[in-house]
Length: 420
Image 1: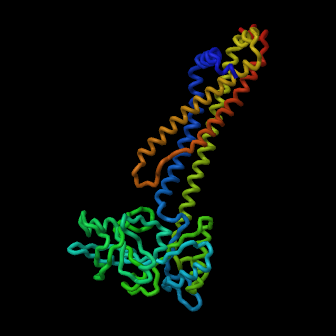
Image 2: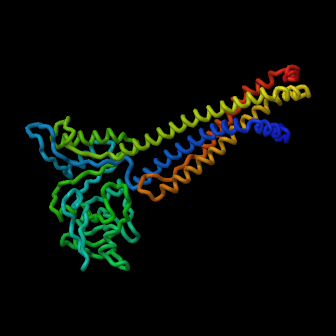
Image 3: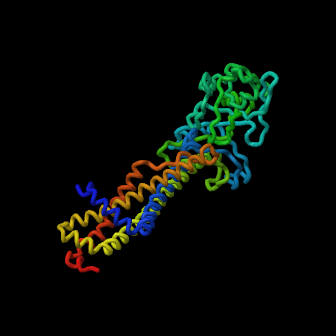
Protein backbone atom coordinates (compact mmCIF):
# COMPACT_ATOMS: atom_id res chain seq x y z
CA UNK A 1 0.00 0.00 0.00
CA UNK A 2 3.03 2.29 0.28
CA UNK A 3 2.90 3.01 -3.46
CA UNK A 4 -0.34 4.97 -2.89
CA UNK A 5 1.57 7.55 -0.86
CA UNK A 6 4.60 7.54 -3.16
CA UNK A 7 5.15 10.90 -4.86
CA UNK A 8 6.45 9.23 -8.00
CA UNK A 9 3.29 7.19 -8.36
CA UNK A 10 1.10 10.29 -8.45
CA UNK A 11 3.52 12.10 -10.78
CA UNK A 12 3.16 9.26 -13.26
CA UNK A 13 -0.65 9.23 -12.88
CA UNK A 14 -0.96 12.98 -13.47
CA UNK A 15 1.51 12.75 -16.31
CA UNK A 16 -0.58 10.07 -17.97
CA UNK A 17 -3.77 12.11 -17.48
CA UNK A 18 -2.06 15.21 -18.87
CA UNK A 19 -1.18 13.46 -22.10
CA UNK A 20 -4.86 12.77 -22.81
CA UNK A 21 -6.57 15.80 -21.31
CA UNK A 22 -9.48 16.07 -23.75
CA UNK A 23 -10.32 12.38 -23.73
CA UNK A 24 -9.99 12.22 -19.96
CA UNK A 25 -12.27 15.22 -19.39
CA UNK A 26 -14.95 13.86 -21.74
CA UNK A 27 -14.90 10.45 -20.07
CA UNK A 28 -14.90 11.92 -16.56
CA UNK A 29 -17.96 13.97 -17.52
CA UNK A 30 -19.75 10.69 -18.34
CA UNK A 31 -19.18 9.37 -14.80
CA UNK A 32 -19.94 12.78 -13.30
CA UNK A 33 -23.21 12.96 -15.24
CA UNK A 34 -24.28 9.53 -13.98
CA UNK A 35 -23.87 10.33 -10.29
CA UNK A 36 -25.40 13.78 -10.89
CA UNK A 37 -28.53 12.20 -12.42
CA UNK A 38 -28.82 9.80 -9.49
CA UNK A 39 -28.44 12.55 -6.87
CA UNK A 40 -30.76 15.01 -8.64
CA UNK A 41 -33.57 12.55 -9.44
CA UNK A 42 -33.57 10.66 -6.16
CA UNK A 43 -33.32 13.92 -4.19
CA UNK A 44 -36.21 15.41 -6.17
CA UNK A 45 -38.30 12.30 -5.48
CA UNK A 46 -37.54 12.62 -1.77
CA UNK A 47 -38.53 16.29 -1.88
CA UNK A 48 -41.88 15.35 -3.40
CA UNK A 49 -42.37 12.70 -0.74
CA UNK A 50 -41.46 15.16 2.03
CA UNK A 51 -43.77 17.79 0.55
CA UNK A 52 -46.83 15.56 0.63
CA UNK A 53 -45.98 14.32 4.12
CA UNK A 54 -45.82 17.93 5.28
CA UNK A 55 -49.05 18.83 3.47
CA UNK A 56 -50.92 15.98 5.16
CA UNK A 57 -49.11 15.99 8.49
CA UNK A 58 -52.28 17.08 10.31
CA UNK A 59 -54.39 14.26 8.86
CA UNK A 60 -54.09 10.53 9.46
CA UNK A 61 -52.46 8.98 6.38
CA UNK A 62 -54.94 6.09 6.34
CA UNK A 63 -58.02 8.30 6.50
CA UNK A 64 -61.08 8.53 4.29
CA UNK A 65 -64.35 10.46 4.02
CA UNK A 66 -67.69 8.77 3.32
CA UNK A 67 -71.06 10.40 2.62
CA UNK A 68 -74.52 9.36 1.42
CA UNK A 69 -75.83 10.04 -2.10
CA UNK A 70 -78.74 8.79 -4.24
CA UNK A 71 -79.24 5.20 -5.29
CA UNK A 72 -78.76 4.35 -8.94
CA UNK A 73 -80.42 0.92 -8.83
CA UNK A 74 -83.80 -0.30 -7.52
CA UNK A 75 -83.63 -2.71 -4.58
CA UNK A 76 -86.18 -4.51 -2.35
CA UNK A 77 -89.08 -2.38 -3.59
CA UNK A 78 -87.21 0.92 -3.42
CA UNK A 79 -87.00 2.95 -6.62
CA UNK A 80 -83.93 4.39 -8.28
CA UNK A 81 -82.94 7.86 -7.09
CA UNK A 82 -83.71 7.32 -3.39
CA UNK A 83 -81.86 9.89 -1.28
CA UNK A 84 -79.90 8.17 1.49
CA UNK A 85 -79.03 9.66 4.86
CA UNK A 86 -76.28 8.59 7.23
CA UNK A 87 -77.37 8.11 10.85
CA UNK A 88 -75.62 8.04 14.21
CA UNK A 89 -76.43 4.34 14.50
CA UNK A 90 -74.24 3.68 11.44
CA UNK A 91 -71.17 4.66 13.47
CA UNK A 92 -71.62 1.89 16.04
CA UNK A 93 -72.38 -0.73 13.39
CA UNK A 94 -69.28 0.20 11.36
CA UNK A 95 -67.05 0.07 14.43
CA UNK A 96 -68.31 -3.43 15.22
CA UNK A 97 -68.23 -4.85 11.68
CA UNK A 98 -65.12 -3.28 10.11
CA UNK A 99 -62.05 -4.34 12.14
CA UNK A 100 -59.73 -2.06 10.12
CA UNK A 101 -61.35 1.09 11.57
CA UNK A 102 -59.25 2.73 14.27
CA UNK A 103 -61.22 5.95 14.69
CA UNK A 104 -64.49 7.18 13.22
CA UNK A 105 -65.91 10.68 13.62
CA UNK A 106 -69.44 11.63 12.53
CA UNK A 107 -69.59 15.24 11.35
CA UNK A 108 -72.16 17.86 10.42
CA UNK A 109 -71.59 21.25 8.85
CA UNK A 110 -73.46 24.42 7.90
CA UNK A 111 -72.22 26.73 5.17
CA UNK A 112 -69.96 24.17 3.47
CA UNK A 113 -71.87 22.28 0.78
CA UNK A 114 -73.81 25.13 -0.79
CA UNK A 115 -76.09 26.02 2.13
CA UNK A 116 -76.04 29.39 3.89
CA UNK A 117 -73.26 29.90 6.48
CA UNK A 118 -74.15 30.96 10.01
CA UNK A 119 -74.34 34.61 11.04
CA UNK A 120 -71.86 35.21 13.85
CA UNK A 121 -71.98 38.42 15.88
CA UNK A 122 -69.66 39.98 18.46
CA UNK A 123 -70.88 43.40 19.58
CA UNK A 124 -70.89 45.65 16.52
CA UNK A 125 -68.90 43.22 14.39
CA UNK A 126 -70.42 40.34 12.46
CA UNK A 127 -69.70 37.91 9.62
CA UNK A 128 -70.83 34.71 7.98
CA UNK A 129 -68.85 31.60 8.85
CA UNK A 130 -69.03 27.84 8.40
CA UNK A 131 -70.07 25.87 11.49
CA UNK A 132 -68.96 22.30 12.19
CA UNK A 133 -70.51 19.91 14.67
CA UNK A 134 -67.80 17.56 15.90
CA UNK A 135 -66.80 14.96 18.46
CA UNK A 136 -63.42 15.08 20.29
CA UNK A 137 -62.33 11.93 18.40
CA UNK A 138 -62.08 14.07 15.27
CA UNK A 139 -58.72 15.44 16.49
CA UNK A 140 -57.30 11.89 16.48
CA UNK A 141 -57.87 11.81 12.73
CA UNK A 142 -57.14 15.43 11.83
CA UNK A 143 -54.97 17.30 14.30
CA UNK A 144 -56.10 20.76 15.31
CA UNK A 145 -53.46 23.17 16.58
CA UNK A 146 -54.98 25.25 19.33
CA UNK A 147 -53.37 28.45 20.58
CA UNK A 148 -52.23 28.71 24.21
CA UNK A 149 -54.91 28.86 26.92
CA UNK A 150 -57.46 27.30 24.57
CA UNK A 151 -58.74 23.79 23.93
CA UNK A 152 -60.84 21.79 21.48
CA UNK A 153 -64.24 20.20 22.09
CA UNK A 154 -64.13 17.61 24.91
CA UNK A 155 -66.39 14.79 26.14
CA UNK A 156 -68.05 16.96 28.79
CA UNK A 157 -69.09 19.42 26.09
CA UNK A 158 -70.74 16.53 24.22
CA UNK A 159 -72.42 14.98 27.26
CA UNK A 160 -73.76 18.28 28.59
CA UNK A 161 -74.60 19.79 25.19
CA UNK A 162 -72.59 22.87 26.10
CA UNK A 163 -72.78 26.05 24.07
CA UNK A 164 -69.05 26.37 23.56
CA UNK A 165 -67.06 26.90 20.37
CA UNK A 166 -63.58 26.93 18.89
CA UNK A 167 -63.09 29.74 16.39
CA UNK A 168 -60.52 30.20 13.62
CA UNK A 169 -57.66 32.68 13.67
CA UNK A 170 -59.25 34.71 10.87
CA UNK A 171 -62.54 34.73 12.73
CA UNK A 172 -60.70 36.18 15.71
CA UNK A 173 -59.06 38.91 13.63
CA UNK A 174 -62.39 39.89 12.05
CA UNK A 175 -64.60 39.84 15.16
CA UNK A 176 -62.14 40.96 17.86
CA UNK A 177 -59.71 43.81 18.33
CA UNK A 178 -55.99 43.08 18.23
CA UNK A 179 -55.48 43.48 21.97
CA UNK A 180 -58.69 41.62 22.86
CA UNK A 181 -58.46 38.07 24.25
CA UNK A 182 -61.28 35.93 22.78
CA UNK A 183 -60.90 33.03 25.23
CA UNK A 184 -63.90 33.08 27.58
CA UNK A 185 -65.73 35.72 25.53
CA UNK A 186 -69.23 35.15 24.14
CA UNK A 187 -70.34 35.41 20.52
CA UNK A 188 -73.75 34.87 18.95
CA UNK A 189 -74.08 32.06 16.39
CA UNK A 190 -77.46 32.33 14.66
CA UNK A 191 -78.80 34.30 17.68
CA UNK A 192 -77.56 31.75 20.25
CA UNK A 193 -74.76 32.75 22.64
CA UNK A 194 -71.64 30.55 22.63
CA UNK A 195 -68.58 30.84 24.84
CA UNK A 196 -65.22 30.66 23.06
CA UNK A 197 -62.95 27.99 24.56
CA UNK A 198 -60.21 27.95 21.93
CA UNK A 199 -58.74 29.46 18.78
CA UNK A 200 -57.43 27.02 16.18
CA UNK A 201 -54.49 27.69 13.90
CA UNK A 202 -55.23 26.93 10.29
CA UNK A 203 -53.26 23.99 8.89
CA UNK A 204 -53.83 23.21 5.18
CA UNK A 205 -54.30 19.65 3.99
CA UNK A 206 -57.19 18.64 6.20
CA UNK A 207 -59.88 18.84 3.52
CA UNK A 208 -62.18 21.80 2.86
CA UNK A 209 -61.69 23.57 6.21
CA UNK A 210 -60.51 27.18 6.29
CA UNK A 211 -58.99 29.55 8.84
CA UNK A 212 -62.42 31.01 9.66
CA UNK A 213 -64.28 27.80 10.61
CA UNK A 214 -66.07 27.49 13.92
CA UNK A 215 -66.34 24.15 15.74
CA UNK A 216 -69.09 23.35 18.24
CA UNK A 217 -70.06 20.09 20.02
CA UNK A 218 -71.90 17.63 17.75
CA UNK A 219 -74.77 17.33 20.25
CA UNK A 220 -75.11 21.12 20.44
CA UNK A 221 -75.15 21.37 16.65
CA UNK A 222 -77.89 18.74 16.53
CA UNK A 223 -80.01 20.72 18.98
CA UNK A 224 -79.27 24.10 17.38
CA UNK A 225 -80.17 23.03 13.84
CA UNK A 226 -82.60 20.22 14.68
CA UNK A 227 -80.70 17.55 12.72
CA UNK A 228 -81.75 14.66 14.94
CA UNK A 229 -79.66 11.55 14.31
CA UNK A 230 -78.60 12.70 10.84
CA UNK A 231 -74.90 12.74 10.01
CA UNK A 232 -73.45 14.82 7.18
CA UNK A 233 -70.46 12.57 6.54
CA UNK A 234 -68.05 10.22 8.29
CA UNK A 235 -64.34 10.84 8.72
CA UNK A 236 -62.64 7.49 9.23
CA UNK A 237 -59.05 6.50 10.04
CA UNK A 238 -57.88 2.94 9.51
CA UNK A 239 -55.03 1.27 11.38
CA UNK A 240 -51.55 1.90 9.96
CA UNK A 241 -51.12 -1.70 8.81
CA UNK A 242 -54.62 -1.91 7.28
CA UNK A 243 -55.39 -1.99 3.57
CA UNK A 244 -57.15 1.37 3.13
CA UNK A 245 -58.70 0.41 -0.20
CA UNK A 246 -60.22 -2.75 1.30
CA UNK A 247 -61.30 -0.82 4.39
CA UNK A 248 -63.16 1.66 2.18
CA UNK A 249 -64.88 -1.19 0.33
CA UNK A 250 -65.86 -2.85 3.63
CA UNK A 251 -67.34 0.40 4.96
CA UNK A 252 -69.48 0.84 1.85
CA UNK A 253 -70.59 -2.80 1.95
CA UNK A 254 -71.78 -2.45 5.55
CA UNK A 255 -73.55 0.85 4.81
CA UNK A 256 -75.36 -0.73 1.85
CA UNK A 257 -76.65 -3.49 4.11
CA UNK A 258 -77.79 -1.03 6.76
CA UNK A 259 -79.64 1.20 4.29
CA UNK A 260 -80.93 -1.64 2.07
CA UNK A 261 -79.03 -0.70 -1.06
CA UNK A 262 -78.22 -3.03 -3.96
CA UNK A 263 -74.67 -4.45 -3.35
CA UNK A 264 -73.74 -3.52 -6.92
CA UNK A 265 -74.82 0.13 -6.59
CA UNK A 266 -71.57 2.13 -6.75
CA UNK A 267 -73.25 5.55 -6.60
CA UNK A 268 -75.20 5.17 -3.38
CA UNK A 269 -72.28 6.26 -1.17
CA UNK A 270 -69.54 8.66 -2.13
CA UNK A 271 -66.05 8.55 -0.69
CA UNK A 272 -62.61 10.06 -0.87
CA UNK A 273 -59.73 7.85 0.23
CA UNK A 274 -56.84 10.02 1.35
CA UNK A 275 -54.80 6.94 2.26
CA UNK A 276 -55.05 5.59 -1.29
CA UNK A 277 -53.98 8.94 -2.75
CA UNK A 278 -51.04 9.16 -0.36
CA UNK A 279 -49.95 5.59 -1.16
CA UNK A 280 -49.98 6.44 -4.87
CA UNK A 281 -47.81 9.48 -4.22
CA UNK A 282 -45.38 7.40 -2.14
CA UNK A 283 -45.32 4.76 -4.88
CA UNK A 284 -44.58 7.43 -7.50
CA UNK A 285 -41.73 8.82 -5.38
CA UNK A 286 -40.28 5.32 -4.90
CA UNK A 287 -40.58 4.71 -8.64
CA UNK A 288 -38.65 7.91 -9.35
CA UNK A 289 -35.97 6.88 -6.86
CA UNK A 290 -35.65 3.46 -8.52
CA UNK A 291 -35.55 5.06 -11.97
CA UNK A 292 -32.83 7.44 -10.86
CA UNK A 293 -30.85 4.49 -9.50
CA UNK A 294 -31.13 2.52 -12.75
CA UNK A 295 -30.34 5.49 -15.01
CA UNK A 296 -27.55 6.68 -12.73
CA UNK A 297 -25.84 3.29 -12.51
CA UNK A 298 -26.17 2.76 -16.27
CA UNK A 299 -24.62 6.17 -16.97
CA UNK A 300 -21.88 5.63 -14.38
CA UNK A 301 -21.11 2.22 -15.89
CA UNK A 302 -20.86 3.75 -19.37
CA UNK A 303 -18.52 6.43 -18.03
CA UNK A 304 -16.36 3.91 -16.16
CA UNK A 305 -16.07 1.78 -19.32
CA UNK A 306 -14.92 4.95 -21.08
CA UNK A 307 -12.23 5.37 -18.42
CA UNK A 308 -11.14 1.79 -19.07
CA UNK A 309 -10.87 2.52 -22.79
CA UNK A 310 -8.77 5.60 -22.15
CA UNK A 311 -6.44 3.59 -19.93
CA UNK A 312 -6.12 0.93 -22.60
CA UNK A 313 -5.07 3.63 -25.06
CA UNK A 314 -2.72 5.05 -22.44
CA UNK A 315 -1.14 1.64 -21.87
CA UNK A 316 -0.68 1.25 -25.62
CA UNK A 317 0.98 4.66 -25.85
CA UNK A 318 3.20 3.94 -22.83
CA UNK A 319 4.35 0.49 -23.97
CA UNK A 320 8.02 1.47 -24.17
CA UNK A 321 7.86 3.31 -20.83
CA UNK A 322 6.32 0.28 -19.14
CA UNK A 323 8.98 -1.94 -20.70
CA UNK A 324 11.74 0.23 -19.27
CA UNK A 325 10.13 0.08 -15.82
CA UNK A 326 9.89 -3.70 -16.02
CA UNK A 327 13.51 -3.94 -17.18
CA UNK A 328 14.59 -1.78 -14.24
CA UNK A 329 12.96 -4.15 -11.78
CA UNK A 330 9.32 -3.05 -11.47
CA UNK A 331 7.17 -6.06 -10.55
CA UNK A 332 3.93 -6.90 -12.41
CA UNK A 333 1.94 -6.07 -9.25
CA UNK A 334 3.45 -2.58 -9.10
CA UNK A 335 2.54 -1.87 -12.71
CA UNK A 336 -0.94 -3.33 -12.27
CA UNK A 337 -1.56 -1.39 -9.04
CA UNK A 338 -0.62 1.91 -10.68
CA UNK A 339 -3.04 1.40 -13.58
CA UNK A 340 -5.86 0.38 -11.19
CA UNK A 341 -5.11 3.36 -8.92
CA UNK A 342 -5.35 5.67 -11.91
CA UNK A 343 -8.74 4.17 -12.83
CA UNK A 344 -10.10 4.46 -9.28
CA UNK A 345 -8.71 8.01 -8.95
CA UNK A 346 -10.49 9.23 -12.08
CA UNK A 347 -13.72 7.49 -11.08
CA UNK A 348 -13.76 8.89 -7.52
CA UNK A 349 -12.86 12.43 -8.65
CA UNK A 350 -15.72 12.33 -11.18
CA UNK A 351 -18.07 10.94 -8.52
CA UNK A 352 -17.23 13.62 -5.96
CA UNK A 353 -17.72 16.35 -8.56
CA UNK A 354 -21.06 14.81 -9.55
CA UNK A 355 -22.18 14.67 -5.90
CA UNK A 356 -21.23 18.32 -5.35
CA UNK A 357 -23.05 19.36 -8.52
CA UNK A 358 -26.12 17.30 -7.59
CA UNK A 359 -26.19 18.71 -4.05
CA UNK A 360 -25.92 22.24 -5.43
CA UNK A 361 -28.79 21.61 -7.84
CA UNK A 362 -30.99 20.25 -5.03
CA UNK A 363 -30.14 23.30 -2.93
CA UNK A 364 -31.24 25.61 -5.76
CA UNK A 365 -34.47 23.63 -6.24
CA UNK A 366 -35.17 23.85 -2.52
CA UNK A 367 -34.62 27.60 -2.60
CA UNK A 368 -37.01 28.10 -5.52
CA UNK A 369 -39.76 25.87 -4.07
CA UNK A 370 -39.55 27.03 -0.46
CA UNK A 371 -42.79 28.70 0.55
CA UNK A 372 -44.53 27.71 -2.69
CA UNK A 373 -48.02 26.20 -2.76
CA UNK A 374 -46.66 23.11 -4.52
CA UNK A 375 -46.14 20.20 -2.05
CA UNK A 376 -42.37 20.01 -2.16
CA UNK A 377 -39.92 20.25 0.73
CA UNK A 378 -36.28 19.55 1.60
CA UNK A 379 -35.06 17.54 -1.41
CA UNK A 380 -32.20 15.44 -0.04
CA UNK A 381 -30.44 12.12 -0.56
CA UNK A 382 -29.56 10.10 2.58
CA UNK A 383 -25.81 10.03 3.30
CA UNK A 384 -25.68 6.18 3.27
CA UNK A 385 -27.06 6.24 -0.30
CA UNK A 386 -24.37 8.70 -1.39
CA UNK A 387 -21.62 6.68 0.29
CA UNK A 388 -23.06 3.53 -1.29
CA UNK A 389 -22.87 5.16 -4.72
CA UNK A 390 -19.23 6.09 -4.09
CA UNK A 391 -18.42 2.53 -3.02
CA UNK A 392 -20.06 1.19 -6.19
CA UNK A 393 -17.97 3.62 -8.24
CA UNK A 394 -14.74 2.52 -6.52
CA UNK A 395 -15.61 -1.12 -7.15
CA UNK A 396 -16.46 -0.44 -10.80
CA UNK A 397 -13.32 1.66 -11.22
CA UNK A 398 -11.21 -1.18 -9.78
CA UNK A 399 -12.82 -3.83 -11.95
CA UNK A 400 -12.58 -1.80 -15.15
CA UNK A 401 -8.98 -0.90 -14.30
CA UNK A 402 -8.04 -4.59 -14.21
CA UNK A 403 -8.40 -4.81 -18.02
CA UNK A 404 -5.75 -2.22 -18.96
CA UNK A 405 -3.69 -3.31 -15.94
CA UNK A 406 -3.62 -6.89 -17.19
CA UNK A 407 -2.73 -5.62 -20.65
CA UNK A 408 0.15 -3.66 -19.16
CA UNK A 409 1.68 -6.61 -17.26
CA UNK A 410 1.26 -8.91 -20.25
CA UNK A 411 3.79 -6.87 -22.22
CA UNK A 412 7.22 -8.50 -22.13
CA UNK A 413 10.02 -6.06 -21.33
CA UNK A 414 12.07 -7.09 -24.37
CA UNK A 415 9.09 -6.57 -26.72
CA UNK A 416 8.27 -3.23 -25.12
CA UNK A 417 11.82 -1.96 -25.58
CA UNK A 418 11.62 -2.82 -29.30
CA UNK A 419 8.34 -0.85 -29.63
CA UNK A 420 8.68 2.22 -31.81
